Length: 398
Length: 159
Ligand SMILES: Cc1ncc(COP(=O)(O)O)c(C=O)c1O
Image 1 (cartoon, rainbow over the protein chains, first blue to last red):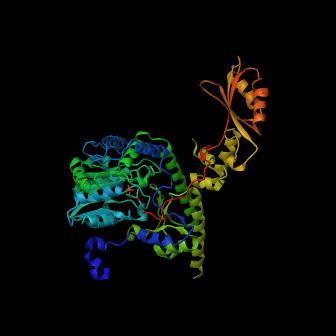
Image 2: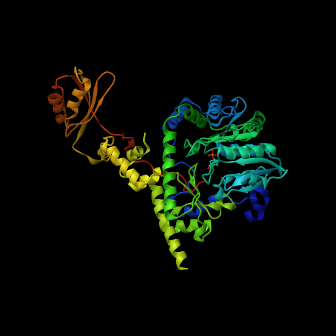
Image 3: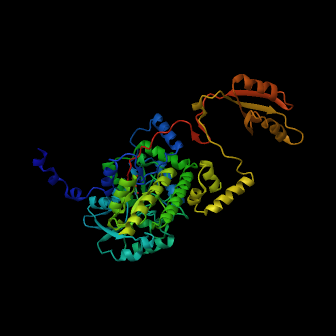
């Protein structure tokens, strides 16, 4: 029987020992229940803008069904290069400094594998996107997490990094606007980080997938700061602001030697990103319509609603400034994040993600995604208010 | 456009309190600004958007292109104003291109609309010609698709 083969013991030990994503685990519980109102979804509720979908159908009719260049269609790389120059303030040569990938997910994996030697340390900040730690481990790197804190608005500071860095540290990974906290970094915040990166002679991977979803004020990219472009892999994609998650399209920009190394892995493991998705992305960039602005407006209204509702029910939450997540503290209700989320699910059928899915320092917090209709946001807040009221009444009688 | 007007255009029934939360404004300011928009005539009314095809009404809608001669004083506005006052005319626009006015006219049946066109509209001084098209089916109105939309296909929890 399979047991006698002891397949588990034959697995690669790194893969075997990585726990399943905390999100996956929670998802399995949620799917056993019916009629759940979910604030647990980390992808836009909006449909992909119609002109993008329509032109993808056209591309399919026209026969864009072949392998593309490993780097991606040149026309797309040119459009990406000019988009990044205009919106992020860094120049990349479309011929050898832009790589089109299967989502930011693949780009992240390529960047780490291209840079890391076994044992090299990678600094990253938690709470963070669930893949970061695992992706570092798959690349045989050593993850060095730095905990950001609610009292700093979940921003990363130089002092936090200084406390953790060692001579074996090779890379710093950044993600702002942040999943799951909704935190953003100001130019001044980034300047401190940039100085640290340069002084320590580190490489930088910056995941700016939520850049367009910045609510109060404009997004600043760390690549636009002096001396950073030369040592940075900039990652972006179409999943979030363009509501194109299923297209699986992302890209990396960086100095030619880094992109060349990433391309080598991509060439042998992925060959190229989907031709149709590349056509879709090209349409999205070359014919920008009102859709992105309308989606951003709606996210902002939901963010405002959520923040006001939390304030009304006495829940502490740093103001979410970007992406489509709020990360309120639930520590004062005397339950772990996981128990809070479980009881909220059982009693009120509202799904949120326990903060611990995003790193141990997420204990005491829950992630509420507002990538769901305003009606759902309103109803979820009504139910959460009721739930919190019971917890408080409970707390007082004991 | 003004964020408050955008919210009202999406759902005019939204409570003042909810709008206040969405826009980060005090509720009494929202109420005050809405009254102000109403007083200034910027907000002209509130209506439900119906899928009339589902109601099997005794009703037809005609889209009518009208060519007119502009008046010496008042240009198109005088004649357009006279036409727009008929209760049968639900919507009226001044257009560029090969005709001048575009009307949406409602009646209980074809004959009634035809009578309106021949007896009321065409006989008005200044109306040169009309072309009448009957509407067969509504796919989208005021930005809202009339077909039932599919349910949310997303997984309930994702990273
Ligand atoms: C911070 C962050 N990076 C990357 C991704 C993955 O994006 P993609 O769909 O481009 O692979 C996500 C998705 O949730 C994310 O939140």
